[in-house]
Image (cartoon, rainbow, N blue to C red; front, top):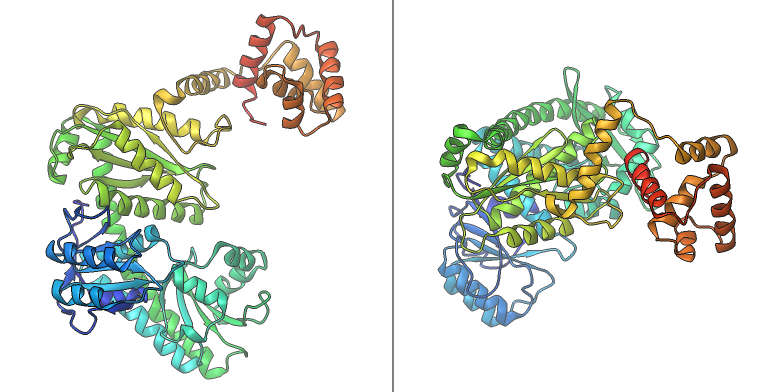
Amino acid sequence: MVVTTPTGVSIVDIVDRLGMTFLSGGDTVDDARTVSRVTLHEGSGVTQGSAGAVVLGAGLADSADIATAVKEYGSAGAVALIVREPLAVDESVARAVAEADIALLGMVKDASWLQSASLINEILESGNNGDRTSAADADLFDLANSIAQVLNGPVTIENQSSRILAFSADQAFGDEARKQSVLGHQVPQHYSDRLRSMGYFNKIYGSTLPVFLPGIGPGIRPRVGMRIHAASQILGSIWVILDEEPNELQVKTLVEAAGVAAMSLLRAKLAADSARRLRLGEVITLLSGGTSAKEAAERLGYGRSKANVLAAGFRSGAGASLEAEADVDQLALTLNTYLDQVFPLSVAAAIGGTVYAVIPHTRHQTDDDYVRRIASEFADRSRSEKSVVIGIGATVADVMTLEKSRDEADRALRVLRSTWNSSGRTVARADDVQINSLLLRLSDALADENETASGPLAVLREYDRTHDINLVDTLRAWLDTFGDIPAAASLVHIHVNTFRYRLKKLAGIAGIDLDDPETRFSLMLQLRLFYPTAL
């Protein structure tokens, strides 16, 4: 990423922060060697842009392949190669590491490559924001260890989204829930949902003292939670696994620690906000087009090259809560990290509930199909409870006309987020979904004019409302399956005979001639425009 070029972070610091292990080369690694970027292993012989990089060895498992990769990346100037554990380092690998002056790191088997890249990039970006941010991070880890010594229990320091910012070194004594959280640097969703449903977050955030939680669930040990706040702003919380309620000294320790953590988090927040504002400013300038976009592109290093826009978001859209805003910000960070591996000059930022990325076509293999493949891979890797969808704008010949590409990306994303995306596709260009996009825009115009459905469809809607039945859904299913009654009955989850009865009933109630093609077309169009809810 060119907007914020990291000044470099020690490889030893990264290993310590992420809890990775040196499989080989740890005793000879130069503490002064710094990491400037993260890149993904793309196959033997492909080492371009690896100087100063931590290389994620996705797909490397065989000793011979790892030894070859170590030699190639060492020659290219990479600082470290990460492979997935468990891995027995044989003599050939150890010799290659020693000769190549590169560290071989092990990543636990359940960790995600994309998540690891995102976490490393966060560390690199924090390093770019000066000593204040790095000091704040170090402060938090030191603080977690100090709390653990006084309370004699494993400690995590988390933000409001239950993302782990720091943890004590004694996590081996934690329960399975804690180990999973530290492994992913994020409390798993089902654990945080449980805490939220039990009202524990409200209790912790509403109290000036630590809150003891004796029972959270099976296999989960008791915990103490302490809010971290500054003035009226909640910044996060401190969590300690503790089998008994804290004593007076432990309570005092947690209260004082929360104050120290608040200062560190405020410093980190200011630094992160500065980097985010810088990216946001560049993206907004690029998307606006014109001479300002050309100047921004020149600052980023690619001038007036071809480019296009990606618009990414969650299938369900984004709400207005702090949690939803944090999710979108995290999506922007993850997308930036991912694109940096394949489009180093790209930049992405969150604007509202959407993450926009500008992709310059500065590499020989960059074309529309390549961009689609990269977008599809990101969406597939990001599958979770909140599915990621991406609209792709057309490639423009000059960044000065990027506004057109953004408009197309927005239209495609809107269709993917809508109920009309019954196919479940995650990536689309505007021309892939042109008809649905046109219908959505026409539906908007009708809504603006307060136009409502009339004729037979309005009759059926009223009948459904007063008789607690779903004849409109019956009609929709029949039309969508082109009269295939077994398939239509399956869509609405009723017996075939029941479906036939309802079809005959609705035709009689609304006076619909189902054999007339004009009638069928009119009804399908009305359903799309006025009631676009998919079955």
